[in-house]
Amino acid sequence: MSRRDRHPHEPRTEPEHAAPPGEAPDPAAAPAPAEGAGEAVAKSDDPAGLYKDRWLRAEAELQDFRRRSLREWDEARRSAEERVMLELITAIDDLERALEAARAAGAAEPWTEGVRLTVQRLREYLGRQGVVTLEPLGEKFDPAFHEAMLEIDAPPGRAPGDVVQVVLKGYARGDRALRPARVIVARAPADPLSGGPRANGDA
Image 1: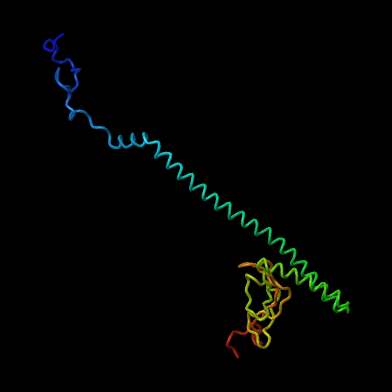
Image 2: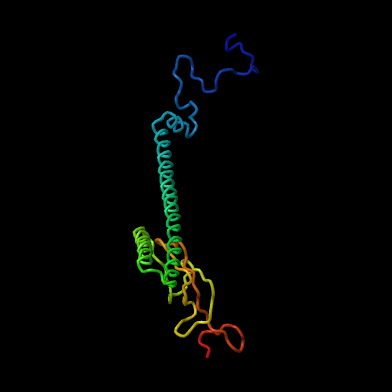
């Protein structure tokens, strides 16, 4: 059936912008591609960029893992060293008590001198490892390095908060205590009228 013989109410099957026979289609009449479609195609067609991004992420994660592992290993090594040092400190305490008891009992000087030299050697080893002895008599109480066993009224010449007696020597390594010093701390004298501590500045 020719175009002229087509029924007037029959729907047209030709595209709306179809070009006449024998002519090339008009590029301007073609529908434009969706926005961003070209960029998505370009990204999917660039495996080098995708692999580079994955490699950078993996490299960052590996560096974080190395730093964390090094920090954990260093902490474990330090903890193991300090356990051994605490055992040596306990041995020093025992030897010093034995030395005091031997001297009080009138032991021979060569024997006590041998014990004293042993204690000295142990202390020298700890010193090479950065361990220092805490004997805070007369210093201000520091809870990071001292452990208060008792509080007493401040004696003459001492202010509240001063360490007035060291019950057991402490040891520190770096910025933390291996074993805090056990001490007795001064406090403000009690007010005889109120029964409580006397405020600073009161007569």
